[in-house]
Length: 175
Image (cartoon, rainbow, N blue to C red; front, side, top):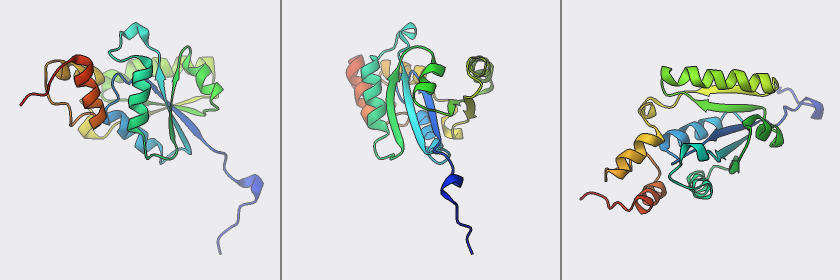
């Protein structure tokens, strides 16, 4: 006989924030989002303002590209934020932050960020996730460079992102 949970014993809804500049959103990003949906009740893909990085796409364009990419994922929403991540997580009622680690070289920087965020708010946890091995080489910077040079990036980003890259860069696909 299955044990019935009393109302006060039901697990609380868990929300995770996946922050990034997402310039542009890649299949590696999408992979982490899809896997996060299995671990959390709600996933918020939070597009950071990140003007210091000189993004190719505006914040509004990046947010739109993310929203198109996550269509069909019921427990995922996209949002934009500016300022301290930890403040945003608190405003959205998040319990954790997901950060992707592609290689050992990512770890040191991400570890420092996680420790600083913990110092600012020890209630918020940071969870490191590795992408599928097929995406470990993938970065938005590399995708933009390939697209700038007219290369085919369709294996690395959703189809609508390919179109947006070509339009933004004024590059036609190579025949």
